[in-house]
Length: 155
Image (cartoon, rainbow, N blue to C red; front, side, top):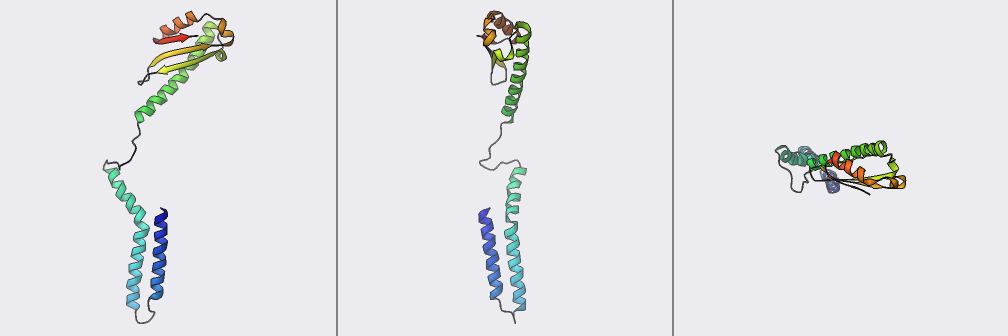
């Protein structure tokens, strides 16, 4: 873009210099042709970015991508969004279950979830701390294994 602006500035200077060098008398028709020619050159230079956009856009409209274009893996983005949302919902629900069933406060349980590439829950880890250390982890582990159908570890 910077090079385009500099070349446009240089062309305007060259046109101005050319008009100064034209004779004022006797060359009226020559002066008109020079004005027309320089105006066309400057218009083409001004339109160059637009022309390159249209030329590049024709490849895009035909379905071809220019070389070096990075294709976004929207499926992976969607899968990550679902996994992130699922993780938040699981965490919220599991904290509510632990509080209701076992009296374990949210701050006394740290939860970790592992998902596979398809977004399926493969492992749940619950780390107990504070007052929750007095609770037997075996029944929690057993109940969560039945609920989630995956590997559950409660410490």
